[in-house]
Length: 86
Image 1 (spheres, helix red, strand yellow):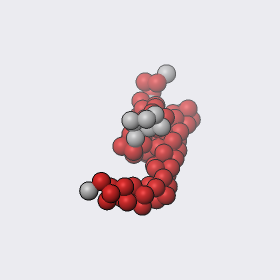
Image 2 (image 1 turned 180 degrees about the horizontal axis):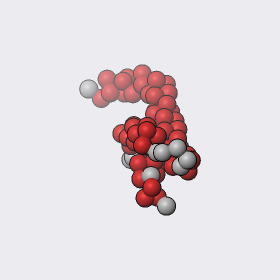
Image 3 (image 1 turned 120 degrees about the vertical axis):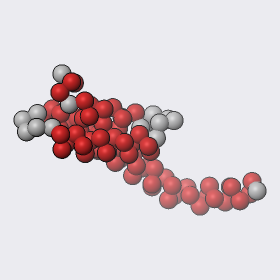
Image 4 (image 1 turned 180 degrees about the vertical axis):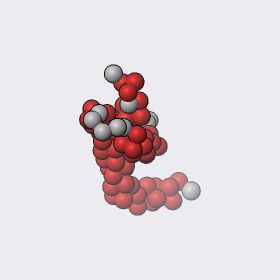
């Protein structure tokens, strides 16, 4: 079943794994990229493969958006903490 669209399944798995601690932005970015390539590769009629690719793109993008928001909110405090450590 998964052999028909391995890029799409890999994208979805990486998108989900990016939410696990120690796996992060690089996995989310890779999920978005692989999902995009999978959408280009999947032939019309294979809707299940497209769903996996879209899931990878959505999960990866969501993780990246959450990390950007956290960085914007907590960034000044982190910079202040680093300044105190010096």
